Length: 617
Image (tube, rainbow, N blue to C red):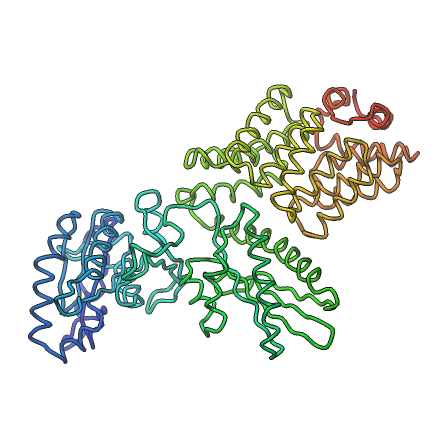
């Protein structure tokens, strides 16, 4: 058995009122001793100290010492026992406490901060605390604890302002659905003598824990975003109205969607003339994402710049510049607001997905489960489909009323059938409709949910009139939904209304040129051209679909029948072989039994092209 060499023991010291860890003062080198065994355990550790203690001591050391001793003995220590904690050390104004759970540690800290904030009007101002909490595997040394986990708690406590409690991301994950308290993500922080950066969260808002309305610590189905007032760079104060108009329009349009929670205009307007950093503003508002912009006028031209910032990481994730004339200023303003909103949502979704991928599976909440499931749905791999469904099921376990989770489960059935992977099409179709209807019942204003329902009833149940109604409702609630425009275009293709279908795809691409569902819009354009009898054009769109997602079977199907109907038999046979390589069990008659083409003549051309190209019946 290998011996473990212990490092010199750290002691909690106070310098100028600030608690910190330091090696003991000795006359020489600390001795190195071998220990046969090291005990470790998971612990929630908290550090607390009195803010401005040195100044209070300098002002009145006797009174301050009495107040601190009375507070510690009569309130702090009993509170520690109330939450099953263990006071490990008191050094000056600093406490080091161990708790058996993160929840108990946080509840103790919140009670301390509330009592401190309340105070007594007849007494001197109450002592205010800075508290840091972490949960980690620690080294047990008799009655003491050591390790990086202890040091991290001490370091984040030093970042806190008077009246603040800061916790690590590990603590945050333990609290979800257990403690209802506002939370602010302060982002990654570099800590002294800690090798890796640590994500830090602020609980409550100092002495306003009870009153501030902020995103709850319990998980939310939507990330929060703030649109800051667009700055006027022209110098003429009379032109401020245009920047304010753009800001208000973006907030209004973005609020119509259901994928983001948007801070109200009245709350962001106060930052117009303040010189705070983006991270400071994000921390005050309790948001992760911030949009900043500017407006510059030169003669008859306008230039609008816009940046989407992930404040928790301190980086810009999207930026764009728009130019236009001010002869029709309101039309220009409406167009720019719509384009900006259409870019923001997919960029935030991508950033959130990246964040969810980095989380341990056991720490995922319902929203994270959706983020983890969505990319798997684009793979068209059966194993990935199964994994996606597990994430969706878990999302519904965490939130039985999460409408988008039901919508994505319905969408998965669409993919399984469309990819010729269903062993029981009637059952899967019925389940998809049931799930879609459940999603709509839970949220009748979510454009994504409505669009999924529209595609389900069109694609799987040939109920094209109801599908059109779903899509129109989706666009009524969010006219900037590229997904609703694109998927409605597919239904218009089924209706044999090719020009309307193609116009809807163009609208979707204008709103979101790099949409993750772009291959659906491309395949819909191929169908639109096929319906119109323009088979060569249809084959071009089908090839674009395959380049966008090589495993998407409808792209291969459309390519086969378009080439055959264009008289390009050999190319059609090659395309048919490629389709069968992906799905050896493909059957033309099975497809014909459920495919929702509304016009019999168009359906006949489509199916005949597949058969003549050599696909098995």
